[in-house]
Length: 109
Image 1 (spheres, rainbow, N blue to C red):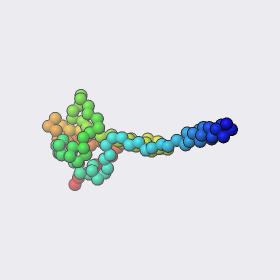
Image 2: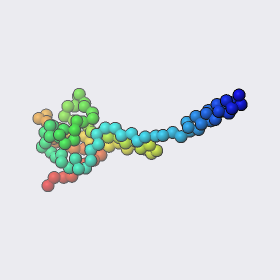
Image 3: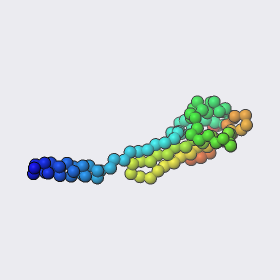
Image 4: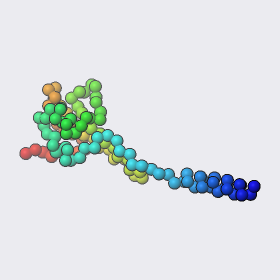
């Protein structure tokens, strides 16, 4: 009987100590767009060309069809969250007019 109680207490002790170490993971969400991809996008491109380079936008605003928002957030396990937004503005013909947000395209010359 004493062996059983010793075994049971050691099992509960191991389970209790196992719960003390919490494993945290990095959480990435949204569109990962680097400077390399953004440099390929320029004024005058149509929506299909932009979608081929950057992919589909994360946010689709039904009230502003001429604005695409690419958003990316990264939450490392033990530090703060980083958020980047890239906003593309198209005219009514579907031609890219401007790029704004956290990552700017290099001027084409």
